[in-house]
Length: 336
Ligand code: NAD
Image 1: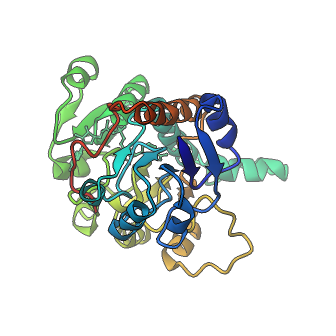
Image 2: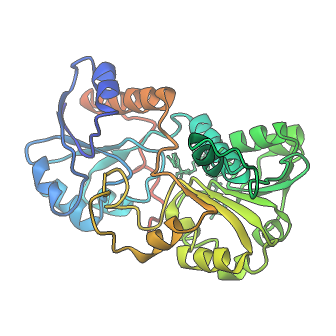
């Protein structure tokens, strides 16, 4: 199938080529899918996009006019695709529902440990042979309470890992996972109760109209002073302005984020020679207790291999006029 691969980055092209075995005719494009770049899809039956692309109603309408029949997402989260519009215009959309939940959960733990044990500052000092230990004090994770918000595939792995550290586990989800209750003593709570009790809060819910700005000033004001918040889900699950206030007041002791509310157009690209005008990211970057990575939690060999293989599988199914079980347009949920 003739496929235009948007947001194709050097690091993932070899994985896609290997999984493809020259079955589908790929064109790799560095630009993300947008209203401007949609025109590039003329003559292609399918497009593949990442989380940086935006398939809004207008973009989907354009793709339909250009003859595109399929969109395959190289991601789990699909908040960037208007599935209702895709259904209306008869474009099938599929994602990669679980490429490696371990990759994401392990990155979340990496952010937590790096912040808590002040590893970046420690290493900066060591590089200049400064082995002074002042201001590098962290806390034991053992016996601390962690709140896992969203206990699906990634949240479940996070639960298992944090249980290994000896943490008390609180969960919040619209669906309770019985296995986590039995195996790890997970206690499900209201979000408010979780926020009041947790020393650490890790977010693993998808972004939708219910989770948009789920963590806001109201909840932050109820949190334990010094709470550590980790977000590897989607940026807009946090109200970033409110989080900045919480960091400034000291309620939030540290923040680790792999995703950011305004990451589109900023992440996945080198802006080191640009003048950055986004005030929120400037404020966050200026704080020593904030650790930011640029949406790289998925960046492991295993995850990239699974993403590539599932992307090819989705295209294989469509090229044989078969359904893929990864199709999202069959069960359309509300997107923001
Ligand atoms: P999942 O579907 O297995 O789990 C999501 C959980 O959230 C489910 O248990 C669901 O019931 C719960 N949930 C949904 N809406 C909710 C609500 N309104 N309130 C409370 N709980 C709610 O998904 P997953 O594989 O665990 O992935 C979670 C999210 O992580 C994805 O949607 C994606 O946005 C993000 N993600 C980020 C990266 C990254 O590189 N940083 C990579 C993969 C996924």
